Amino acid sequence: MKLYSAPLSLFARKVEIALREKGLAFEREMVPFTQAAGYQPKHPAVLAANPKGQVPVLVDGDLTLFDSTLIFEYLEDAYPAPPLYPAGAKARARCRLLELIADDVMLKPLLPLMRRTTPPDPDPARQRDREDEAARAERTLRDLYRHFQAQLQGAYLCEAFSFADIALFMMVLWTQRLRGPTLDAVPDLAAWHARVAQRPAAAKAAAEIAEADRLLSPKLG
Ligand SMILES: N[C@@H](CCC(=O)N[C@@H](CS)C(=O)NCC(=O)O)C(=O)O
Image (cartoon, rainbow, N blue to C red):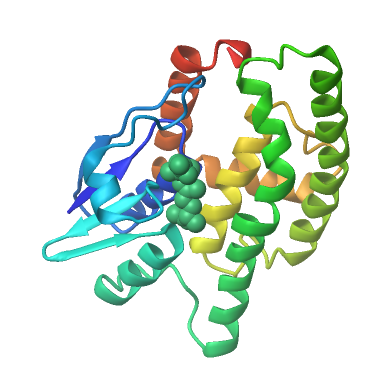
């Protein structure tokens, strides 16, 4: 298998964690990324595989796939052990919903925080607007922390460790690296995050992201 990933792509890192949790060997190619230019120029293989021009892209033999959630679903079907979705239609749907809330709903307030790693706007008024928007987004992120804390089922979101934990782990890690709200007000969620962070696949991704920030995101270093 081959994965097109990127050093600071939270969606591609999701897939790296899932592949390692499933014990699957893969070759990884990191596409170019800088804080100033983003993903430009796009990697030709990614452009050829994904009309959105985004990573992750997974190639498994004659199958080429993009989108981290779709890749999760394929991995579970093709390589069911160990499972990363719970058994039972309702439990699986709930788990997918939690992943969607992490990926889509939590991404929205995270976007204004991402500007903290890009060069400041040369117009001071526009830069102040950016900072105000980030402050509003932090309130939404605190609400989402409380939502996810209430969803915990014992040690993990869906009883056993699942794709939902991987998705939320990345979103919370991203919020922390962008100097978003701490987890002080949500101790159970903080304990959950520490628990997931100890898993070797998550620990490896977190260590590589920290190293990528040291090289690529001086404002966070
Ligand atoms: N829904 C997609 C999102 C993928 C995505 O946003 N990838 C980003 C990196 S994290 C990307 O390649 N961005 C480049 C672009 O959109 O031009 C997924 O889950 O894979």
